[in-house]
Image (cartoon, rainbow over all chains, first blue to last red; front, side, top):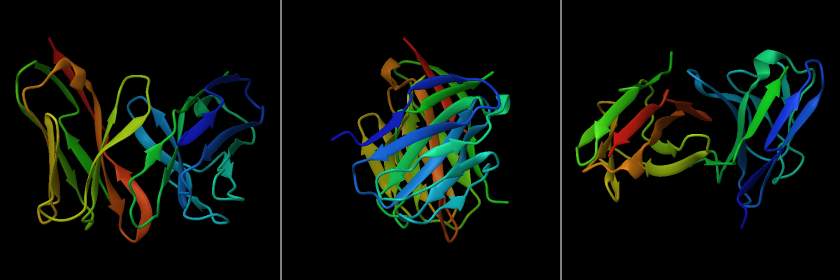
Length: 113
Length: 111
């Protein structure tokens, strides 16, 4: 059982480029989340999805978009990357929004130059 | 404003000592979560505390929850170097299926 996988592991990206970070879970969890983690700022929620077909904005959604076409996949897209989006991105899932123990993927380290 | 405050944010201690990390929160949530993160790694769930008075223990770590005081503690007994990590607490956001995260406590345990 893989749990949650993220791809790529790391990426260096030129500013202005479009980038999609992939997240897949095989636990049939209903809820999925995208966070960014920056030194000194802790974990900040970007977008979330309580169930397939629905998404919502978190604390820092600007510059990012998500989709949830099925239960397993929750890609995060940066339409036009900027240096301030340099961060470590974590995808997480939980069995149900009402029991919110979240399980995290290994993370993607993104550098925007 | 909904807040989760951890205390201390940084802790350096010797092996064999006991210490407690505090997590205060401002929501009315009765569910609290503790996570561990090793340097350069992802977050790992440690404890889920689901009601007032809940206590959970795993090895040298014990977590408790007092919903009336809006306080959770993570107690470390006879610390060992392997427990060096950053510890986060998080609570459910009122009527919303998100977590509010503390800033994390970086724990360094010296041999």
